[in-house]
Length: 200
Image (cartoon, rainbow, N blue to C red; front, top):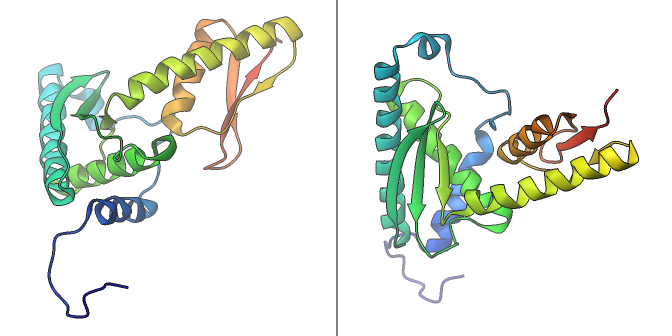
């Protein structure tokens, strides 16, 4: 309860802005490892596709910049296109927008994708990073995946990793495939996990 009984208008606090992001994303479907662009985008010329991704990045950057202003958080925003996706990075020392195990980051990413879809009319595969979290997490996951591969090769038994989001599972699948083994995902979100299988 507020200490001031008189109603007054004020900007949302940092915590309120983050909570709003986390609640809103609950209604947005999660991405999957097998997500792909539309047939129209796949058939587009490289220059046109590049322009589409640049536009997605700019829309997301504008949306996130407004969100940072509302939450009164500092951060520079960088955009680029890579691997058929628009990438947006919030460069900051504040990990408030990452959250526990990247939960707030995932929520913000879905909200940014929703902002792009609202503006363009098509679904976006935009990737958001905050404070370099995804790069750091990628290195950790690659190490975990390699450990699982080594264990499976040595024991000949399947290895089940901890539950991960689609972005994290994709990293593990890639490491396993590069090592010459097969992996699959099992379970339902948010407890979906990667299983590394021995050679048949």
